[in-house]
Amino acid sequence: MKRAAFIVFASAILLAPGDFAQKDEIPKSISESVGGALGWAEKGFLSVAEAMPEAKYSYIPAAGNFEGVRSFGEQVKHVACAQFAFFNEIEGKTPPEHCEKGGPSKATTKAELIKYLRDSFEYGDRVLATINAQNALDRVEGPYAGPNTRLGMAVAAVWHITDHYGQLVVSLRLNGIVPPITQQYPLKVR
Image (tube, rainbow, N blue to C red; front, side, top):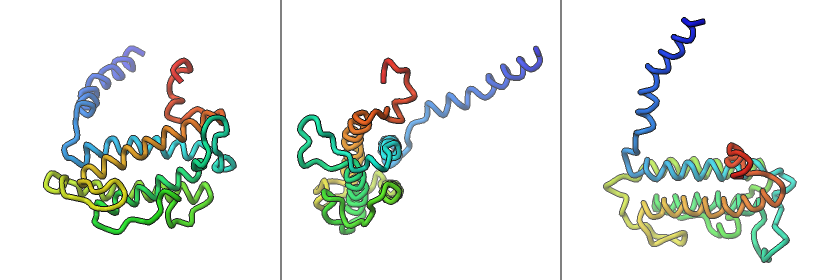
């Protein structure tokens, strides 16, 4: 028993410096700096999109001033389209039209919308990886957050996801669902 305890203790001591070193590391590039926030935003948004039952994807809050707002599913589609748009503009490509209305994607079911969302996040992550110190301040044109710089457009993409994350959290809570990221905390802070 003492030997097992010693092995566990010794392993913890020997392995701990590596764990602490990883926590102290900071991003080494512009794309890594923005990528950390973008990854967090993507994870949070995807978790709320997955948490809402498909039957509630048409949900629009009724109490309060919600006339003319997008349904839960329409917001998921809007965010996916906008991600393609922001990062198309960074690459100098023509972005999809009418993202405010969901854009050209035919996705309608929860599964299709989640796939569209994941695809948009993967695409954005790939484009973000191309932003560096030499091109971060290059001018970007376009209807989605332009004119801007490549870096500014990437930051706008992070902001946009978090803006809609907040809106979707309200819909989850109004349907009795605690947002997945919040579920890890004790009840009194939820």
